[in-house]
Length: 104
Length: 192
Image 1 (tube, chains in turn brown, cyan):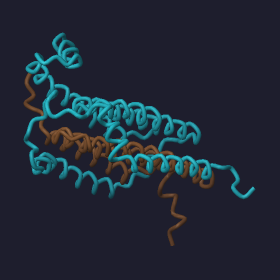
Image 2: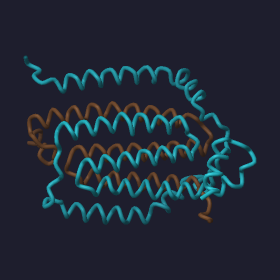
Image 3: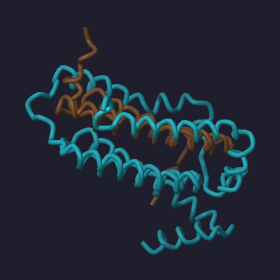
Image 4: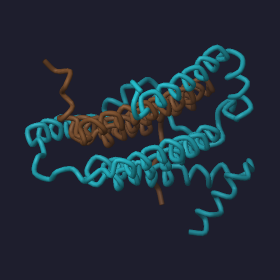
């Protein structure tokens, strides 16, 4: 069984692909919940690229950056879901195209 | 099957004599995880039921944790599973349960947008290997057990509390502010 060698380019390509899928989710989906899940996908794509480059250079610093990204993402999800719940109480929907009250 | 298990055990036990067999395993693990990762990510975007999407996201996050292991970021793999696949996903599922979110309406798919995204995305996917190979050193193989090390939890902790100490403290403040913000946002009647 031979799959060739795994290079840094493989990991970066995978990260890019993951980012594109997440971006498609953010643009296409209408449910705010799923849009937020796709945002997590974007953050994870960046994390994967960071860890791969950190391994490539033999440095631990990118992993510290990923650690902070995970923390900030957790805070972001908590706040985003709180806003979602607050909006749901008023509008009774989670569809993003229904949330245009700030548009003029 | 047996040599798969054997080389996992050998890799985990960290013996130096396994260089050859672990190098044979690297691409196998990478491709299995990569295909699973992309498939579950596409599932997240495609499925209509939010619970299915959440399950897809959990699978994606766990697959990525496994990829972190192949990159020897063991601590991050554990944090990924505990914080992301654990805490964050529980939050998502709680909100899905709380709001009783229904499936998205079937008729209102924005077809113009879909065509644009699939077109541009398809072009980008074809270009992905080319773009990734532009990065300096992209062709260099990443082998298990090589490099300077320094990715252990102890080393990370030392960095976190020395050169990244102020940032670490700022993260604590951020989490506190987020918690207070959530409580304020979700109060039933702020005026009363």
